[in-house]
Length: 308
Image (cartoon, rainbow, N blue to C red):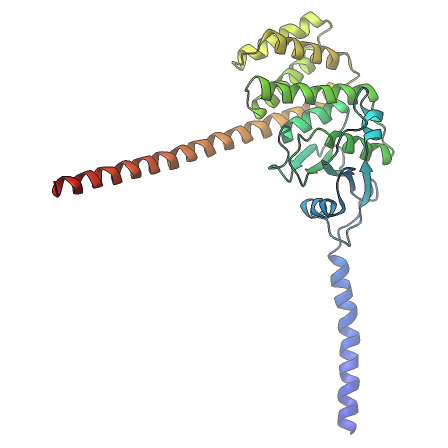
């Protein structure tokens, strides 16, 4: 009996020693909260059903125990941040925003690229820099196929509720920039990444030259179109000139965003190279199967001739 009591007491003592350590291990798994910027903010599109919202949470890598602030972007938010928009718009695109220290840059990831059909990561990044969003990690997701435009509203709201007001004019111009970018990609048949590269290069040149007139902006646009060997209709050229004349007139500290524009250029060029490499691989696969089919056809011809 004494041995049994001793064994039980020893076991209880071991459990008492192990349990705190286990609790400590569990706590160490939780992500550290940035006391300066707070927890990540997640903004869901108001059109999402309860089931779709759960899917978005999974897509954004959220767990039940994660410390996040959650909000919903509504049609009222859309007209609040972007004048002239439709308050009855259907909003599925959702976003997670983690603000970072100065110098970290702006990083955008579309975690459901199959469902964001019109807007690329670099398009988002370009528009957000115009709106005044810097030094943040942004993830965008949708459980259904959508254009992706409404995600901007969610990001604007995230900054609003966190106490950092974005300039309303800059937000509207950023939305116009996103519309122009997607329109160029769709109507002119230019690859989305090529459109983003064009917009980024024009911005960099505006930052470098600091044009004072619309004519000077037009010259920059024309030079970039020529140097990048991009052909646009007169109407699309005018869209670009009008857009960048508005950007020129905004109170943007281009010196402050120049490095982020350069980082964006490098990201776009890397993406373009990856696309080209993928297309090259796809062509090789296509060539292989074409050759295989031809070889099989020749084989059957040979067999047929033997029995002729």
